[in-house]
Length: 230
Image (cartoon, rainbow, N blue to C red; front, side, top):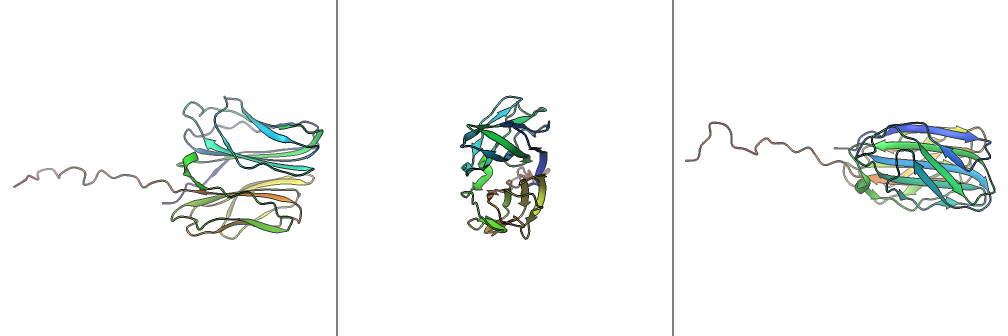
């Protein structure tokens, strides 16, 4: 088996805004699914970790190491959708401690048949100052998939790496973009990569997702009708 094809739930951006917060479109997640939230921002000032809030009530999310420099920030969260949260909602990400913000990009996706425990590896994000780059993985297990997120400081169209399929991309009008990509069968794969990053600083993330266990069959669990012991 392989992982399910990811679903893009929301893809929004704010350009030339003075606000420290950005809010997603309304979406309805699948109960029990693995949810990813990716936020990129161009800003002035120093920043403490950004906060995330759910209109339907917050639940536990794991945050990847926050990536920052003097004018740019990247945030990625992941977690399992709780059994009481399969309702229409929005997510708001708020930057902390900045003097002004200019642009936000916010992408949200889910993978059904997977949950937080399905993440087999989440390498430290990388931030190449190059037109191409990637995250190195240990060789992925048989049947597992890879989910990748790119948050580059550019306004050009990013190209997925070989064998990767783009889930969604948002190019803000000036100097920021975000992209998600995946490989549902990444057996043995050791990199999640991108090209056309425009030579600016890019924050790149990758996650190996375990394939769901095969469905159990009841065939053979009971003796055949009419059989008897001798």
